[in-house]
Length: 410
Ligand code: AMP
Ligand code: MG
Image 1 (cartoon, rainbow, N blue to C red):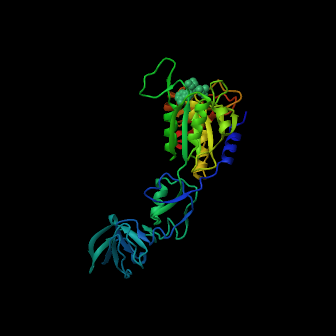
Image 2: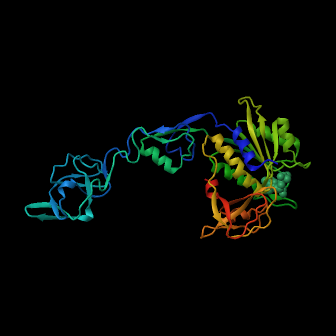
Image 3: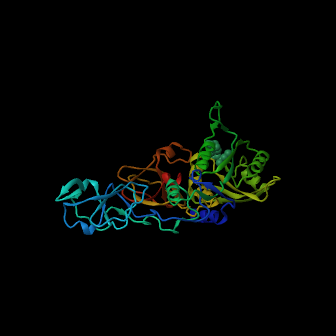
């Protein structure tokens, strides 16, 4: 058996980012992977500006609280004032450039209109420090700074950064295209009656949602009969125009499991037994493309049929592989170390277990009661997976390693 780490390393060593890059308007780039690092063409903010509605002053003029200064100009956001004359204040609003000569902004709550002696204007009830309430030019982004690195996933926050640096478009990798089909003569579609011996095809919908959630283009061939010919035909159709063929079921070695001989006939296959639970069998290989417009090969990944095994192997092995095809530089999820609120006594002696677990309000991990590899309710109940090393039993209070679905499904 391969260890989980060895299998993942082999997958990641094989995967290369898709070659095509396209420039997308930032309104369409969210969720995509940036293909070329980006520099800012401006400083952000471009000028020193006010963080408050208030009065721009020279600190040297505020010799004591209660000083009254005439108001020499008014600077709303979007306009540029003139140099602040000594002994005066400028009415200023949040985001407006601080006039030359001013070195602090007094928030309006600390000022009032009034007269002191012969001077009428604004009475400053506060002793400012230099720079108070001034956002400095370039304090967020300096001119020319690298703001986004190639390989980063463009979340809403990266789109905000690109926009604030004035970039209207971003170069991204094209979407990864995945052809999927599902083996098993027992499978029927939701909406159809369930004859004796049949089950609903849940992997189809789980994997489509997972792939679409990762931004892939999915070509779904549906369920395929458990015969060698039908499986070979589906492989050819799923490989045409796609980067990856993903299947579930039929990867064991029973005589109803045709994926192995079919992939061997249509390309090349490695059958892996990985020391993980659930999800021990994983098929990895490639399918020759025979279609006229395309050449080369599509990757092939065959997941086990049991729904939890398919889901967990997708998240732990297929997801990082696809991220690499997408051009992402960061493919490893963050692993947290957390206390367990549950007991686990039936550890598998040889395999790394991915236990479905939720987080309680104290930040401790609770294990779902039925960890069977066909128990889909365990996925819905859980917030993530505990990575439990081979042979490890867990007592309440022991620390465990936990990966959150929030991260794996983002
Ligand atoms: P297999 O890997 O084909 O031997 O399937 C293992 C188990 O997973 C069997 O109980 C199958 O009925 C079940 N299974 C296979 N494919 C699916 C699917 N698409 N949706 C739900 N269960 C499946
Ligand atoms: Mg089967």
